[in-house]
Length: 382
Image 1 (cartoon, rainbow, N blue to C red):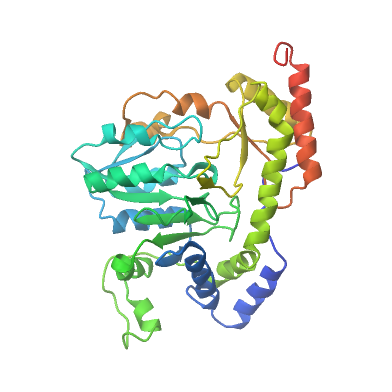
Image 2: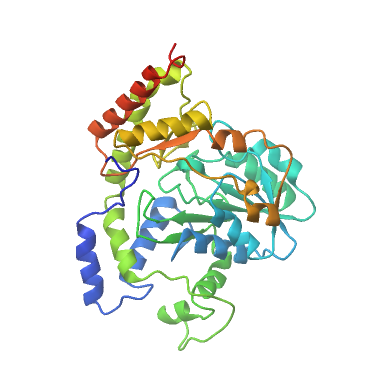
């Protein structure tokens, strides 16, 4: 079976985990956390990177630091994972869903301004498949209405928009290091701060409401409970696992892009004939090959293609069920304007296998079977 995903592992990670164990420091903010944080800060040029136990927790921290209050409205796409919404609902916010662009599957920046009310506090953008939203327009709107921008860049590590790393353009950026992501620590995330203005608040929030971080830096002679917080620190074991991958980040990224480009090249005849639609990456965006998806005619065709590929030992999946159609989405949110593309496009997407253990030969086999499906489907290839 060609699996849809296999968690990333590099041999050096085991050595680093053993090193962390021998150091007698396996709780958070040890040497491996500092190495990973420093790497992210250098790579993205962000002011501060704080690792968390998940991207969900990074989003929760961003919502807290944004001072989201009961009754505030937060704009976001409906085509996203529940965590994007949960972070703000937990603060008492009302969600306002904005339709997506059919090309990138990102929030349609042209519809944002019409969705703003006097209760709007923030815009939460999601960079789908590691391809950036149109951030210039979004930031212009945010500045015009004095809104906070939170980037859900869960899929965006190593991607950029006009030369700027995703997660560093808005006020807060959130990465995921879940096992399905390009770089993984099993469960994990990171919060990126655009500037140092809320660094101390963020550290306190992350450290159970204490000023423990200042204590470890020698800035205070003892630490105590100084604010509201929770436990958002990942262990050194998780960070050691991740550090082995960050050391090889460019190599990992190169391999994924090689596979992505192979898919695109081999499936181009079907794209050119209009049988399938290809993923779109605008010229001013650099993506990270987080996923390779195709768009089929409709949901029925997708079901049949998934079944055909499964019989041929290929595991493929569709993606998000739009949040506005879910029970909690109806309870905590509303859709601004018309749902022209969100539901329609979500029913057409099919994600193909993409992970670092995948080989070029396997990509060729997947594409061969997709061609076979359409050759056998009367009336589709003509």
